[in-house]
Length: 305
Image 1 (tube, rainbow, N blue to C red):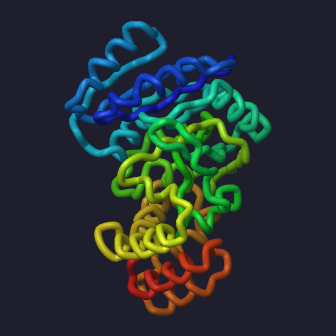
Image 2: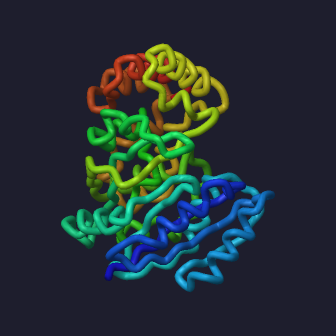
């Protein structure tokens, strides 16, 4: 069986954590090695993790101070061993995985060139707190390319599985500032290797509380979500795509200058008004949502991408 390292960061997740751990440890057809870093939980999460680790020899638990989920996940990436022909997966703490999730990902990745960095991602089923189905993921999920990812949207980390060639690129690098561990890893894979998409779903992706509007089918909720997107991007989350592009270039441009040449358009777009307009009118850097494309054009002009 193929070995799969599952990387899970927890924080005050006791409510749904047992169900997720059971679904990870119960994966079929693969040899799971579960690595968990707790990000300073104050509830019973740590006690729960320690109990599971005592009962499962293939599970390791690391306790840390609260640094936020991005740094916590990247700590796991940096400290997870690079094992030949192994695979690596991210996990949220409150979802549920169907038994064949990892095996299906491995089988698709095995169809790629094993010498190249490769990443898999899939559709998912959005559910409420009681796991009642709400909808599938967004329609553009399978249409994402390296250009769209660089200026518009990310990939849900909980669906991602990647190969050892990508882990060897990621593990030695201490990243500085990125918008998300999953988006960063996906960017590296898209620009330096290959990405495969599975339109099947193997995850019940739980959304509750303040996240519930994300899953709503109400057109007004979607309109409000778009304006919320713009307001956040004008505030503390401004320039997230520029930061991601700069980080990828900082870490890999010296080795892969030709592959990353086009990413410089995102990393350096604020240097002049001409570069901003060049990025706006470059048809490759597009979005499948006209509203978001308009919002992105505004953000580019304002230097807030």
